[in-house]
Picture 1 (cartoon, one colour):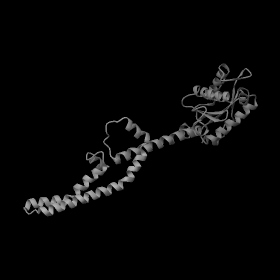
Picture 2 (cartoon, rainbow, N blue to C red):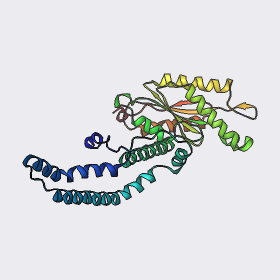
Picture 3 (cartoon, rainbow, N blue to C red):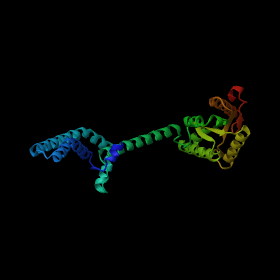
Picture 4 (cartoon, rainbow, N blue to C red):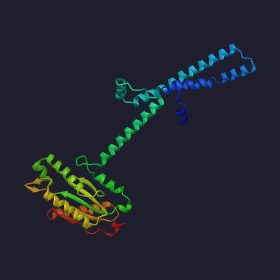
Length: 291
């Protein structure tokens, strides 16, 4: 790479001619040596000198043709890495010539392709971890965000939330209205939780919140505030009544997060069975859940 950069001033737009210049210089070293010896001794033979010069030039030209043939696949690869629309744009709006040869074009093309590939990977990764309807994390993304936390910060409270009578919303208002309600509810959860908390759509009309470094009282108060706002400023209504939610809450102090999620889900079930529009705390986790 250093040698390539050091020689870039020689025919910067053409690698073929740069290679020819190097071949010409190196193949003429014997000729230069012969000239130096002839000048020093006064015994230079001009006929032999002319024949030797022509022979070396022919050899350098042959080397250039061979090198050009070998570089043809690289030219084709470089052209493939530069989109056709970019070529059309350059034809339509001429710009100052760039000091680059086929190696530089190939390098920039590979780098552009790598950047585009990484962007596609990032987009696919985001799509795999983000709920398309609400814009918040999906179940996989929710768990992935928890997994990336340091061990010392994997403690707090897990809440599993379910919108009450959501089927009636879809049946009476339509699925489009149901989708808007889900998106508005997700925005409400995100707006009324802390930045360190993790909010995700668990599936269907269920959502999950990880209240980081929070005790059950703090998490329960947060959910109660959200529930009260849902009554005062509803995101939707059925039969003239604001849409509410039920929630199951479980403290998590280490150990597998799935255990705390399971207990929060059980607590949610009891909240639904007890009349909905309520927050139910799970039974205290066993000692094994504290790590």
